[in-house]
Length: 330
Image (cartoon, rainbow, N blue to C red; front, side, top):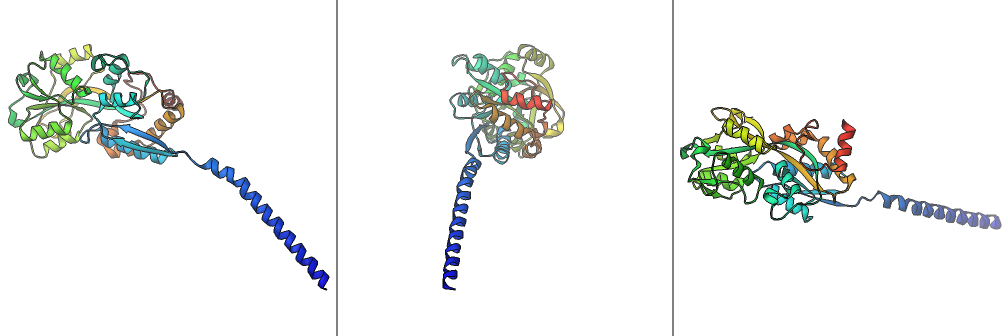
């Protein structure tokens, strides 16, 4: 009886040891699979514009989309000096993705206009065009200004120095025969321009952005805002001289103006560089166009972003990753 019990104890110990070895082997075999499941964090810095513009809220919405839809993505939207500043920050690697006007993208890619001195910016790639950016020329009723022809000698906000807005302002003023010597140019952000009009420190301002623009809405809350139309002959000539411009109308109900406003627009683009991998560009493009409802909720301009218009007005080479996504959807 003792011998039988002893044998049983030995057998139990052997079985216990075998079970321990099997469990240990299973853990070891499982470890490589667990390590493969770990996703590397990828930081995506998105350049937008001023906090009172359209780029900023849409950039914030895109950052949230990327964080949710792309494994490992840590995306942040950064307030910047907008188009021209974003191009420069893309070229130095400070940004991975940015909002840029399509005319400014072209200037950078060709090394002309705003980039005449710096020269061509290499490696820029488009992911998509988003929505029309409307040239809004605003003043208030108490200035007495009723036309761009009234700008002589006035303090006019023309956008940040070297910005896409400033290029639009300079070109439109030239259409009316004005140079900066004929006015008193003020290089202000959208928020700065709105504040200047509120305080009476400036007489009018150029703002190029999706409508409605928060800076204009903020101004209209306490002041009677006047939007100035661009005369048909001037608009036609500008479209002929600068093919990025299109003629558009701001409906009266956008800002509660007395009538519709005829003006010009360019296109907002999402721009990266050739440093972004094809896989990442594909994933970003896919995430954005499969979450358009979130962009529409972030800003009214987001409602104009569609897959059907995503390649309209692209002024620089399309990123292969974005092209792959659009080809799948066509």
